[in-house]
Length: 156
Image (cartoon, rainbow, N blue to C red; front, side, top):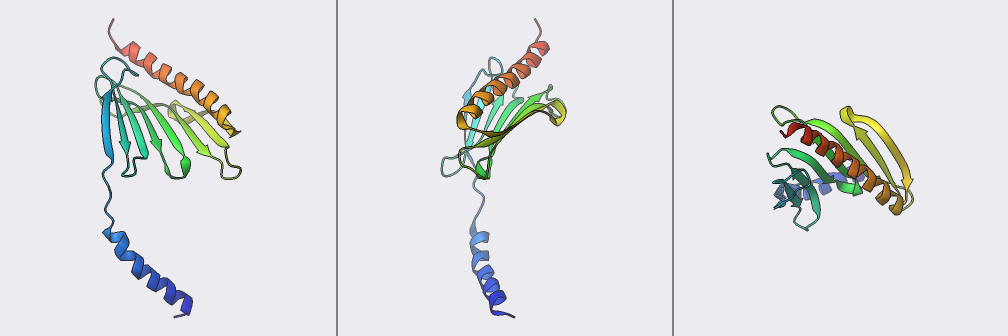
């Protein structure tokens, strides 16, 4: 055994008990009334032990998830929008993915997906101001599409 592989093996033995001792933390959760997808809906926020946001989940009055926003490691953020009645499986109504660019700081990519994961629009090298402007437009569009679907389902 070479000196390098012996060091790697010893280091692995030292790290293993630490990894085994760590137990997954249940995220903190708060739920508040929210009318984004109609009267009687809710918004659930999940965060880790350091109070960093993990997800926001918007439900309609029937408890069906209509929008889910997730934060991932590395600064990626994802929004999923759902249509359907919740009786079987959800159908994607669309999605937005925002990712920081690895090169120059302060630049992002954003991809807009329609139903069936069809790419509607891709942006690259956005400044923060451009990202905020374009995101506001597409986020509003997606919410409008889902609410339009929900209005068609409601009687009267």
